[in-house]
Length: 111
Image (cartoon, rainbow, N blue to C red):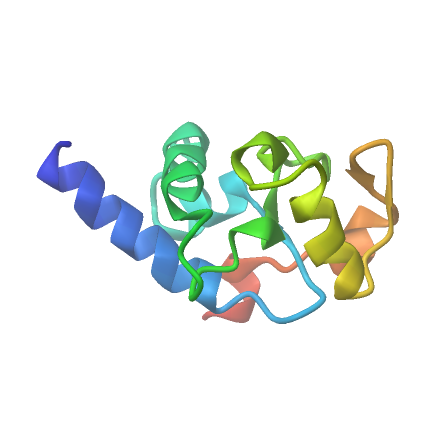
């Protein structure tokens, strides 16, 4: 793996660790916060690598529409959904209901 990607991944994990319980953010919001607005896909790759890291709540990162696009990277059939539902977030058809209500914007929250 490219050392630059490793460094970027570590920056992503720092942001993801800040997402509060019961809140979610998007790949693009994290990329924007890190000054790489067009790198949402790289944030997704970082999340794919983090799904088994206990200190990185990767389940709280979804796509810009609130879809659980990374759910197939979690163990079990619906683990990502179950983790979010345990935090009080309602999911219907792999999408967060009232996404805007639960959205946490690192650009606003970490300034």
